[in-house]
Image 1 (cartoon, helix red, strand yellow):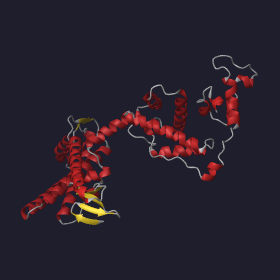
Image 2 (cartoon, one colour):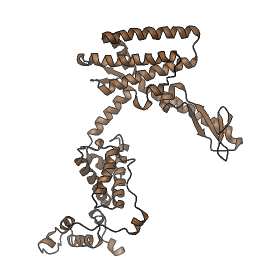
Image 3 (cartoon, helix red, strand yellow):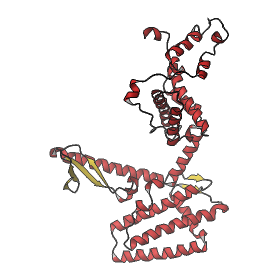
Image 4 (cartoon, helix red, strand yellow):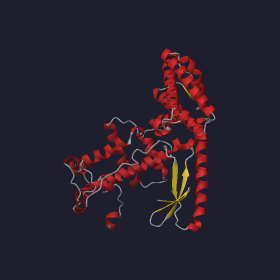
Length: 396
């Protein structure tokens, strides 16, 4: 990489220009701890580089402004969210969020620069606070931190009434977080390097209001049944062909049977791990070809994609699930698996074959006679036969 100027780089054989931009300190945590952004201008022509660089800088300015706006909205929503009970995960996240925000503010103050008087004053203030709060923790005087705790919750857009049973435990946990933040600030004051994203990993902390909204969304997803998800997928396209619905329904029912064996009672209970186990479950059955397994997985992904888009579910657990790939040799020798005895008994269970009954002349016509024979001689499975039209055998 060749440095052309402070904001320009050239790299690669063609000398492509890149724009470099430092991430504002108050947004570093939102970029996973990264302190700079490097974007390709997609040109090696110096005559248009400046124009593209300006456009890139304007775009980044807008991105930073949008991030600040969204972050501020999370910190100060219009209506506080009422929390009837403070769970342990919520209190732990609140403590991490406090530490993160205190250290980000400390970063900004030190970046702006401190003269000798300000530096000494800050050091005395931090030491006095650490001594006072440490004594409060040692004595168990947690009530004195409650006003600060409630004020911080209000700033985060959360309203709560702490019960007497949980008050001491909650306030003690919050006080420990406040002291932890002071300890890091004092280490920084002694010249030690303590980066905010190393003390509090960005992926382990969320604004409290956002965490509560996510929990509410999960609770709503947990009430969504298997049939509701399938119905939403089916209604996504008007007048889906019956053969398509049956094929997708077969894959969905397979997933439901698997989920029942794992005590997963609704689609929201599924995870990426359980979807991988489902693929292995289909493979272990030894009655499905690799192509069929991959097709069913693709159908399930499509159903979940619609459910997520319609806000029924938060995530698509099958989004990154992999199927199987056949070797070239396997493709050359590909053949259908024979039906098992149980499958043949199910196929030929019609009275025409079991009780020498005459062929049906009713609504289904000759279907009850010919469909089992077609399955026997072609090896086709029920979901494949269900998609055939009357003209299909003639055309093929």
